[in-house]
Amino acid sequence: MSLSLGAWHPLATRAARRSSDWVDLQWSHIVAALRRVAPRARGRLLDVGCGDKPYEPIFLPHVTEYVGVEQETTFTATAAAHKARRPDVLYDGARLPFEDRTFDTVLSVQVLEHTPRPQALVLEMSRVLKDEGVLILSAPFTARLHEQPHDYFRYTPHGLAALTAAADLEIVEVLAQGSLWSVLGHKLNSYLTLRVARVAGLAQALGKLSHENVAGQVRPRLWTLPVVGPAVVAVAAGARLLDRLAPEPEEALGFVAVARRVSRAGAPRG
Ligand SMILES: C[S@@+](CC[C@H](N)C(=O)[O-])C[C@H]1O[C@@H](n2cnc3c(N)ncnc32)[C@H](O)[C@@H]1O
Image 1 (cartoon, helix red, strand yellow):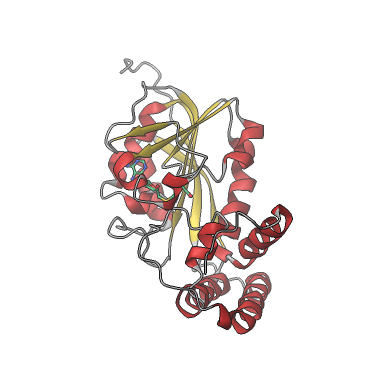
Image 2: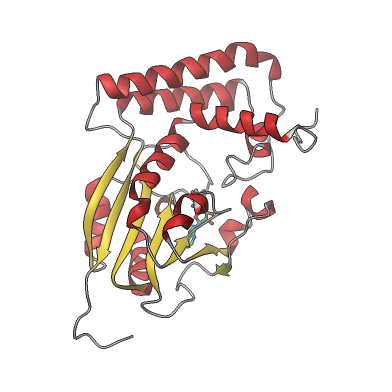
């Protein structure tokens, strides 16, 4: 059976995407955290490891320009490489192809776990930031293995603070993405959707999981959906409720850190 949704009525596709976003606790928490910090963005924004730029609509109202840059080798292996919305610049993943102090804001979402040299990448982000510029970093604290073999690390708020401090950046704010119940719910829903119903291909047809490889996907088990569908909705609803009623501060799916570039007053350019 073809998983192409091209023939679907656009409203049905949009409704399916909204529903799948709502049960996808990781996506929901990342988007909610980015919406909260987006007003801190300004001027020229660089999205490092932008993929198919899923967060551009959140930041565009706050910035004058949105530039996406990607590491060519890893990006071309993902489903995002086949999408209409593409990075503006591709590079080798080592030195960002921009002058020092070029951007007012640097954004990087779920990228730091995919580079074997995260400190070097944060130093590069800091280099291209103007003085007092803003860095917005999102990174997972717990997540299943993905984009293998390029999946190297997970991050605590203290790890993000250490990486940024070593790059002349001061942490301004850190937001947790969900709590214990979202962690448990997300793991369970990932298992139900990806292993039981095997709907990764369907999710990609809806525009999700675009950072994953497209090759080698197994046939979906659509006959499980009458059970899996209501189950994932119940799990997501329960997790959202319990995160509010019984928050656990030592658990989260990930963190968003906002940092400010310390002024290089007196330092020579370059
Ligand atoms: C999980 S995806 C996230 C994509 C996008 N930010 C999002 O949230 O949908 C990780 C991305 O990081 C990119 N990446 C890995 N190392 C990078 C580097 N050194 N510079 C820029 N991008 C990098 C990969 O190509 C991949 O597209």
